Image (cartoon, rainbow, N blue to C red; front, side, top):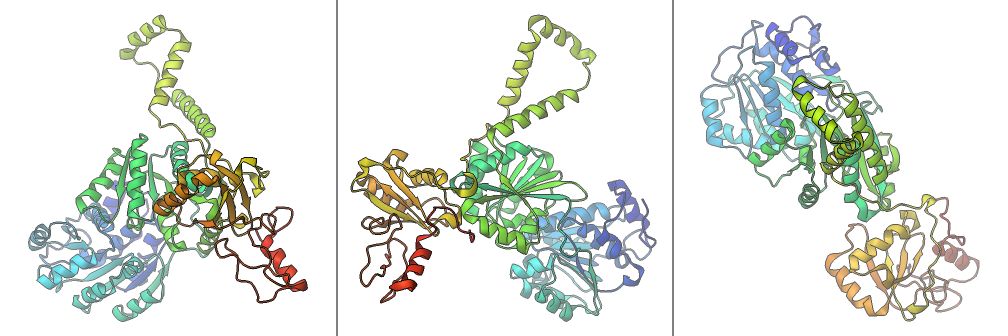
Length: 590
């Protein structure tokens, strides 16, 4: 490996021992001779090796003779990270990078024993790594001496500002010597970061290794469309289809993390969870289980989206869509690191197709839209993996020959193959049967039920433009109201909403269940409609005209308020718009 001139020999030895064959773009950029001693504002792609980059960048201040670090009792370098996990990860990276140089590294993060941290600082530390709140506590209590500090690094600076750490950062930077060197590493450089740089940096040099409008080539994005109530089943099938060595599943809330972790654990997956409500020891144990192979799946909130680097992480699953494009990229960036290929799967209910499209557009990401893996596709993939494993198996060893001969004598090859196949299948969770979406969104033939005289009608706030379709509406309605499909009569799907008929004897019980438990989907609501919404409209959900040829809007049925008088050509045009296409097909806007 060729290391640029000027890099300390001890760091070169550490890199070679770690197996580095080349440096990444950001690592090479910070080593430029003209940047030595300069303040830096660096933006680089997630997974580009930023921790090693700033470890190399601060070397001139820490290794004046190029080999061993000076044994000051006071810290010479301070690295600040937004989360406990990222701070601990930075500490581990700097330990191997500066191990040959004899550096002592102390970590100060919330949730850990502060007395132990104080003792470590008192015994002397060359490099201190911590989170903003805990570092400020140590400075205020006098246990962290900043007087000898030569360099300060803010890692994931944009995330620290998003988490509300600006006041803590300004306090820390204000307590550091004015002649220090300050390095800001940030995935993005919004106005807040520019303001912080102008205030606390001196003529900072700007470095960017992010290619404009170019997505991470080592990550394959897939959007998997599913029925809203099939989301968890789709996640199970994605896990089974890929059988990745390590996987992270991102959820929107802590409750979802707990629920999904329990569901996957019950299905036989080796899973751990990671969220803000866990203690630091629990979070450390979860990450360690992923690193040593005791667990293969981590279900997490966005607390794990920044900076967490797990080995052999080949699959990222978005169980809940992220709120913005930046979060999507940071979540997805946990895979496809250091030249390794990865897959990012977004689980998208049909009702959120447009939201997912906008999200990908703003993130400048191109994805393949497809259905979630079916049970048949998973079983076929299992078969191929089994054959590949057999083809790669080693020849029969001397210690195995006797047992192999006895098996072949006692059983036929077919019996042995069947036993092997059953054993392989027994170790794998069974795939789920998913509901199929009708291609093109064509509505099914209306079900005319003569035994539904006096049926009670309900309204769903999703229609054709939300890709509503009876195949997934029907099971959702049944689950929400604890009824069976024979209790449901006609289903009518329009542009903006849908209506369904319920046997009158089940209406009150159904409504009570929905009010208590909801529909199981945050974006979908069910309300009761008084009377027959088809009267006077042929299934359109409006009452007969009140006056002068106009149509009165029905609040319970989701109609708009009517004009005082709405007749003639203007009224007909409005009526056609609200009624939707006459042939039942989606309009061009859909």
